[in-house]
Image (cartoon, helix red, strand yellow):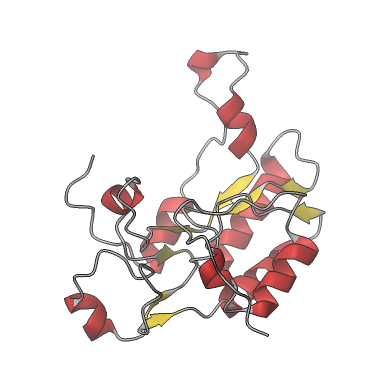
Length: 199
């Protein structure tokens, strides 16, 4: 447990960390052992850190912070190209573009002054804060650019989704369902039981 959480990284710092030359393989000590967790993530890309859900049953807020820290589009697309070009067995399927919550990419408080002084544990409970920017357009654009990359056939979103945020963007829901769901849509456990899609 990290208490307090680390200071949030800037986009440039996130890009630096994720741009390091990772091996993208299990540690050699595992030899030829089958590692189910590795099979699940080897073709996935982490696009952000942090969560403003503030759920008492979850440690993400404690070790990643409640401020969303997002990578740049360029950094994410570059990692997809690296997976495509350098990861053995890649067949064109990216298993996830996500993070602690799939659809919090580039979401933040509308006013930095309010964000600095706010002491609420959650930006989404009991209701979504009126100061929270819930614009999903950056994420929609990222999905479209990623699936347009040569050699990429399918991109699934397997990280949990906050549908109370998602339904604020019918275009996001349409994009997600038409192109990025492989039969199942994982809902974040912290999402309220009821959410209605605006007409």
